[in-house]
Amino acid sequence: MIFVTVGTHSQGFDRLIQKMDEIAEKSTEKVIMQVGSTTYKPKNAEYFEFTENNQLIRELNKKARLVVCHGGAGAIITALDQGTPVIAIPRRKKYHEHVNDHQLELVQALEKSGKITALYDIEELENALNLAVMKSKTNVTKENALVTTLRSYIDNLGT
Image (tube, helix red, strand yellow):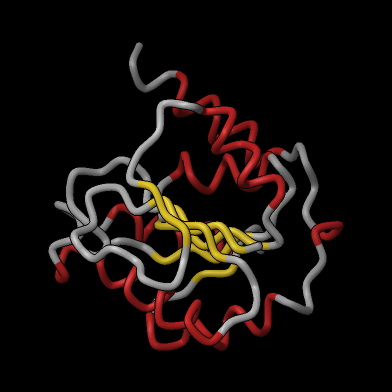
């Protein structure tokens, strides 16, 4: 199963959801999407908009062979914490998906560290999914310094 998540940002991420839905139409693998405020609604995959059930999100991340997500720290941390490989596509200001390009900076840094697979061209998503088949969940450590550091940073944002 592939789990796709776009987080809770108020701007949609139609570019990702629509492309993943096109891929799901041809795939034999189950796809579940958390679409948030995205206006495009999938026709070929199960989906939900939002949930306050954090346990559900953790379970979907854990059960997934792969998580495809936006470049939000929370989505990436949750997947890595469950030991699931991540393909992260940053929301971009130029597509009106966010107010700035901070997700681009985060995704670039995590890609450089080898923690995630970054994708900058949505047209390459299907190729990235095919390459991810070769990677095993065992290559991702459940607890690592990156997850701990990011979790600490997020926890301290409100203080």
